[in-house]
Amino acid sequence: MNEGLNKVILMGNLGADPELRYTGNGMAVLQLRMATNESFMDKNKELKERTEWHNIVFWGPRAESLAKVLNKGDGVLIEGGLRTSSYEKDGIKRYRTEVIARDLRFTGRRPLGQPLAGPEDDDGEPTQPGAGVPATARLGKNGARGRPPEAPLLDELPY
Picture 1 (cartoon, rainbow, N blue to C red):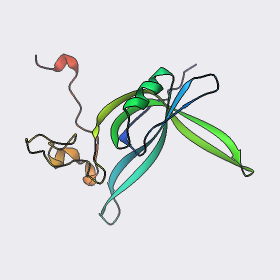
Picture 2: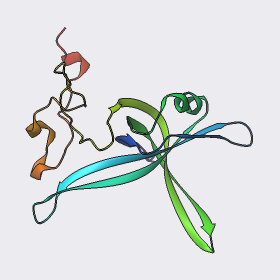
Picture 3: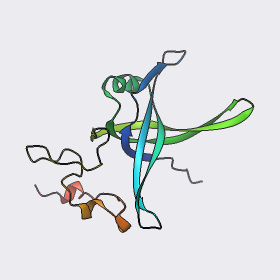
């Protein structure tokens, strides 16, 4: 019998400061709200942006340590799996889908209101990931932001 794969990788920005709580038996639970943005061309060939919000949860000692360093606006890459639960409110059954996170990596901080690729600092270095990459490399088919070019494998790096 084949086992399934439940894996999610998200890259975006935290939309609020993290909330650290503890269960009845003292287990740490860290809840994050994360926004991911997607740019696309609509049928009128106008560039549109869509923001999707995600609920992220870390458990245990990792939750406590991350609560000390994460802040609203931080750019992060989250890896984990989806978990959907249900509850009843006012006689209506509701569902909540969360990402149960296993790993987090910092991708840099994007100041609120700034575009994904920002200008250069006075020292000539890009201020945001992808800022130094030509627009043609950042944009995919029909002007939509796509995945960055594939990084070479470690065996292919010249040393």
